Amino acid sequence: MTKVCPYCASGNVRRMWDGNGDVDWCQACHHAWLVNAETGQPMDRNEADLARAGLAPPQDD
Image (cartoon, rainbow, N blue to C red; front, side, top):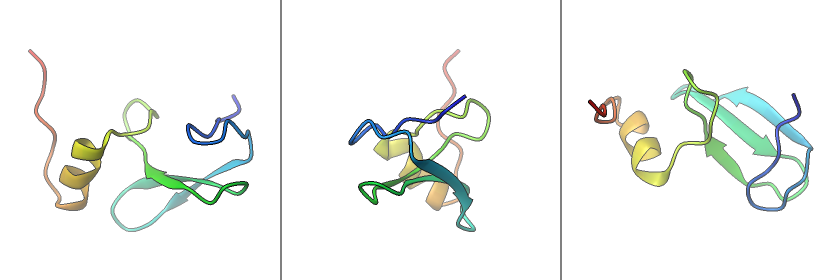
């Protein structure tokens, strides 16, 4: 499945590891975003901030 950049809709997205988690990086517009390792979906800003701090986001019950 081709990953698509949420910023520019390019399909030229690569997955990297930055030491804090999986990061998708768009080679077209150069935006980068943390990815939820379980779902493969881009994290929202709060989730990404928690991941960088080594904390898990709250779980929905």
